[in-house]
Amino acid sequence: MDAILAIFLLLLVFLVVNTAITIPTADYSYESKDIRTAQDTMELLSGKINFNDDTFLERISGILKDNKNSKNSIRQVSAISKEKLDSYNLKNYQFQENNVLNGKVLASSGNLNRANEVNVATRNYGDYSYTLYVW
Image (cartoon, rainbow, N blue to C red):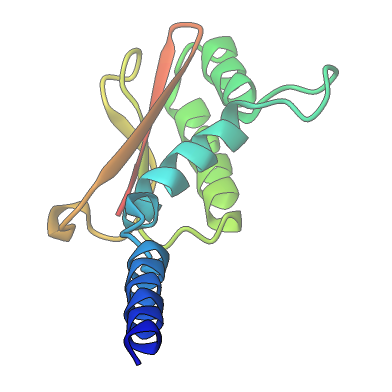
């Protein structure tokens, strides 16, 4: 009887230890989904598919630089940026140039002032510095 009780207690201890080990812990990377979205989107905008094509940031920087940051070139880049970011199904975002255009918002969707949590990704191309806010 003592042996059966000892085996039962031993199995009970193994069950408790096994349960404690398999309890899922909080995965903090899933809590920061927006920052991954902001970083991933900026990587898409600044990355090349192959070595022959231009990046999105390279293309819009070229448009701005070639036209000396004219209002027409800013409107053109804004339209291109809005179309590109909308194609990524972002609900709330703001895309701006910080260095040459002094914080000019190129594309946005949603109200940044009402956002509880804002996550940011920044990339540079030449003299231009682009920031994407996602909330």
